Length: 258
Image 1 (cartoon, one colour):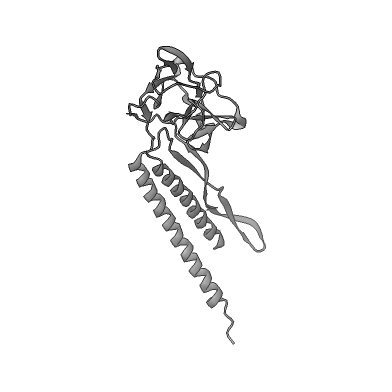
Image 2 (cartoon, rainbow, N blue to C red):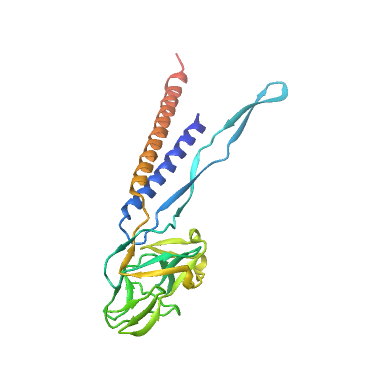
């Protein structure tokens, strides 16, 4: 009986984690460059049950017992989002052309991080930064400084101001973007902070005055959330049934009549 209780409880916990993930996806549906997460749910190994008879060395196979499920990992889907025109010179959108996924490089407290959120701004010192103040890096790993917001960026990330070349964006390519770790604020980092290689011209294109919208499918997310809720409720009812059975076993079956 307790095994069944643990199995149902594991299903409730997995459904709860999936619901939290879907809630976060829908909360970021308007965040530029956001990549929706999805879960990989796995089952615990099944147990093989056999029946032993007293005085008989032979065993009879009863069958298998399912021992529950768990969320093995939560990873983002790096599917290209739609582009939305804004007209702002600081808004940049990446479009993947090659096999991998392209990212902007930013300096996050001395560590290189990567983002698809192309909503950039110029701080009081003239540095091109993210909305949260992290400096955008060029192809040489240096920060980018401009004199005004009147600058142009071509399809290959080359920045010019009043017709004078300034820098080229440090756009990199990840062949296995699922291996990146989310750091918050739309930023990603590699394992052990290993740098990603610069992307080639054929791997991406930059669109100035556009942002990449989040790739969250609201309709599908709502359907998945309802399914997760119902799975949680079904396992909850199983737990309640086991609880009533245990209560009866303790209070009635185990009662000693005087």
